[in-house]
View 1 (spheres, rainbow, N blue to C red):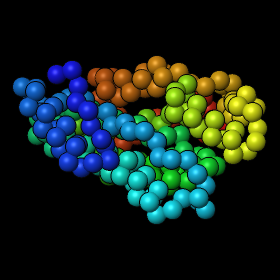
View 2: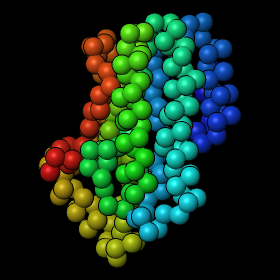
View 3: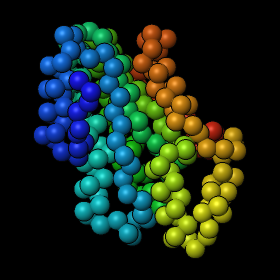
Length: 204
C-alpha cells in the first residue's frame, strides 16, 4: 500500500483508513502518530462558531477517532506506541492562535487519561509539542502576522526568533527525533508525557 488519502475531519474517512491499514497488516500496528494541520489562526474576537467546530474536528476529534480505531487493536495485541503531535502552545499560549491555544491542551488531557489505562496492556501514549519549526505552516503564520500587523515578513520573523532562547527555528528532523524516541524501546517506561520541542521558547 503506497498510502491512503484521508480527510481527518471526516469520521467515515478515518474509519476507512483504519480498515485499510488493519486489513493490510497481518499483525496489529505497533506505532500510531496522530498529526493533523493546525487550526486557522485568529484572536478570540475573530473566531466564530464555524471556526470553533472546524478546529475541534481537526485538532481534537481527529486524534480521538484515530485512538479509538487503532488503540483497541494495540491493547489487544499487548504492545504499541502512540504519539500525538500537539503544539508548544500547550505549555505557553500564543497570541493570535486562540483555537489552537484552547484545543491542544484537550489532546494532552486525553493522552494523560489513556496512559494509565493502556500501560498495563503494553501501550504507551505520549505527546510531542513542537514550537516554531521550519515548515510551510509556520511560514503561513508568519505571513499572516505580517499582513495583520503591517510589519515586513523579515521583521515578524526576527521578532519571533528573538523570543526563542536557541535563537533559531527548529528543524522537522528534530521534531521527528522526539517522535522516534517515544516510539523506541528506550521509551518503554515513559507514558502520559509531553515533550516540548521549541528551543526553550515556552520557558523564556
